[in-house]
Length: 102
Image (cartoon, rainbow, N blue to C red; front, side):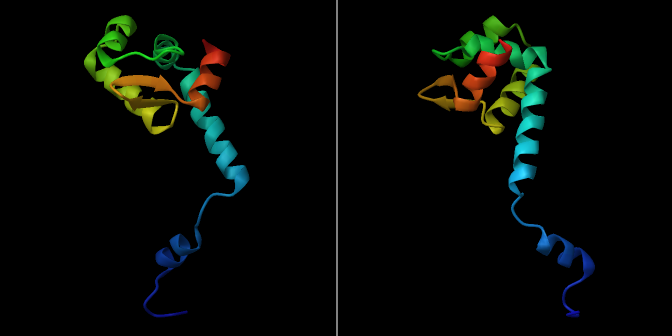
């Protein structure tokens, strides 16, 4: 083995992109995290098919600032929502989730 590469570097070096099976599993885990949380389901329902701005979402969701930011960051990061032109809108996965749990 090369002296410049230790075991940890070798381990992380052979980890690459997830396989298709791993990607599907991760997607299902994220969908479960949205579907079992009532606040996230409510945010998807409030955004709806037409979208809402931040003020409307905060008022209609009834969440305080901390939990609003926490759940919105999760939904944006995981690709269920997108922010464009000052409005939060559902993405394709967000629409699918909205249709199945709301």
